[in-house]
Amino acid sequence: MNQLYKNQRYTFIKINSGIKNLNELKSNILSKIYKQQFNAKEIEYDSNDEETYFLYKWENIDEESLTDAGMTCKFRYFSAIATCEFSTRKIRDDNKKLLPKKERLNLQKTEVIFAQKDSQVFCIIYSFDNYELDRVRKLIGFSNIEPLPAVYQIVPEMFTWLFYKYITNNNDLGYCITIQGITSFTGNILSSENKFAGNSYVTPDLIITKAFLANNYSITSVQLDIEVESSITSFYINQTSTDNELRVMALKGSVADVLLDSGNELHIMPIYILFNIIPKIFKKYTEEIDDFENNKKKSFLSVLGVEVVKQIMARNNLTIDDIK
View 1 (cartoon, rainbow, N blue to C red):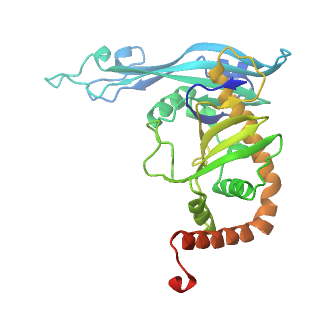
View 2 (cartoon, rainbow, N blue to C red; view 1 turned 30 degrees about the vertical axis):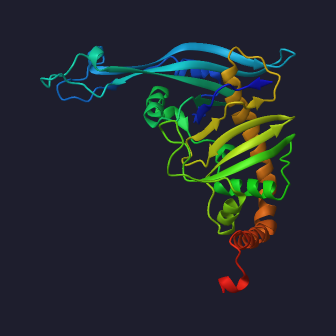
View 3 (tube, rainbow, N blue to C red; view 1 turned 135 degrees about the vertical axis):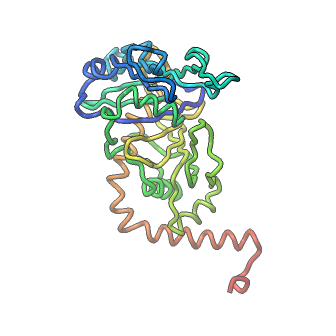
């Protein structure tokens, strides 16, 4: 068992299919640097003069693997730190003269994992901050990033189906996975400042969630409590707002139910969620979604609507005459 001792934020992207394994990734991406030109009229960019640009580079590159108790290799990956220079807010002295680079310099260090699954390579960036993510993408190279596969294209319809499974007590998702809890949100619950966004409306009470669903409103984010072999993994997941990334936040106390040995336990959870839990949920979803949409959804939402009306009337001591 591997328990997470702090919340973790992951932005998940796909590396271009032209890079088919980690060896190719190492030579094509991890060996590269990026020079970001400083935007000031009095500085002319010169690739040979470090005073004229901010440097992005990879550091602490390690090849690692997750193995089971029998020491059979299960997952091979690279961990690395994206080290990116960027400007402080103050770039000029009191006389409006541009400060030397060392006096207007901030340093960003972002943990990144590159993992191979079959002949596909993926990247997990430990951040939601949009500025930070943009720097890491520049270091990777925008041309080296492509849309995520369908299994990671999370849509509101999947959340509606998950609520159907949970509300109807049919919470078995197969593969020894069951839903033990689900909370819905509308809006983007995870802001670029690494905290919950204030523009999200949490619907922890099922009566509110039922009202949203009954009116065909979209649930765009959920917190899932998933049980696998008596171990609970809890995480927030947003709908995929762009086909180039998926954002997930694993919650402190979550347990990965796998007998894996790793040099860094913080690497286990994103690999467990992104390459084990989510694909299995998606597979079950694809197996059942046509039957749900065509045969069950309409009656399910109708029942929810009736339940909502009854509960509201009971809570407010209303009668049929009151709402005529």
